[in-house]
Length: 201
Image 1 (cartoon, rainbow, N blue to C red):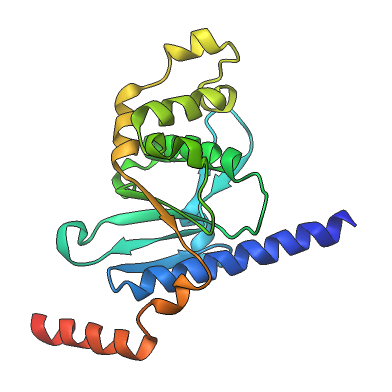
Image 2 (image 1 turned 90 degrees about the vertical axis):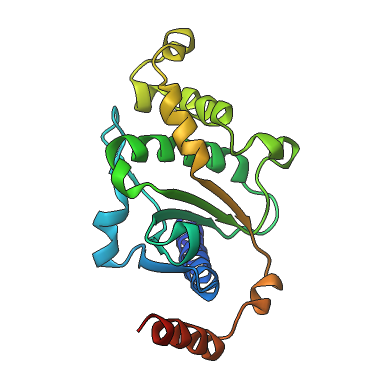
């Protein structure tokens, strides 16, 4: 029953996005303003592949607060999976999306967050936020990003400065169901945020 499976995957994806928003907001350092597929968020979170008629979108977007990141924007992708999945391929796909997003909307691409409930590509963990790995992801998706099916020719088309900029902006956040229960409560968060407002006034 493909339809049921698809609906189940969509429901799980929507649940993951809501839970990622709740976790981000609970840090008191992030405000996840846009969440797919809310109508007001879709346009802000959607991008076009340079050489493909299809579009792609991130699950969440918003801005960071306080400290070194105050006022910076972020785009986030959430993946709520249990057990075996195509998480590794999806992370590579996500990096190619970040590369394209930076090219198209650099002024809003201060941070790219990957939020999942399992670690992607754990055997290559140390590489996942490097410019070299971003380059690898772009080459994997070279046809729709660079319009070049030949990998050797595509090598020369990748903008390494963009790969480096994307790598600097990457966050890898791995959650668990139990970990989510340790975040600050809505009541305590309201007290913290109220104190911040009063101290700034």
